[in-house]
Length: 162
Image (tube, rainbow, N blue to C red):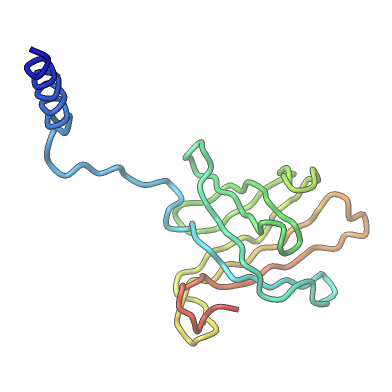
């Protein structure tokens, strides 16, 4: 009797495991609104006087949870410590922010002249890639200095890594 009871339980469990909730077809999870501007970037920066601030450092751009026309710019505290939200013009790749909170230090950062250009840069290994550039002003800098960021999209090829 015990064998019959165990067999019934196993049969029920097996049946439930084989039943699928898939409606069939080829489901598409879709994408995000800023997916064509999201990615990893090697960016260098200079200040308003042209002095080097940092050499090529890995940054990322990625969608916000709102999934609207906003994205994050994030250097993971490896460059000038920036993580702020920018508004993107989805048609032409320009972006900006006015007094956006910098999540790494609580300052406010204003981003101007932001642009992502398709196939406008060359990677370290000589590949044609997208270019990113923007100007950032941090509210704690009363001297009016801006940080000028410019870089290119990361390819993932070993010869392109810094």
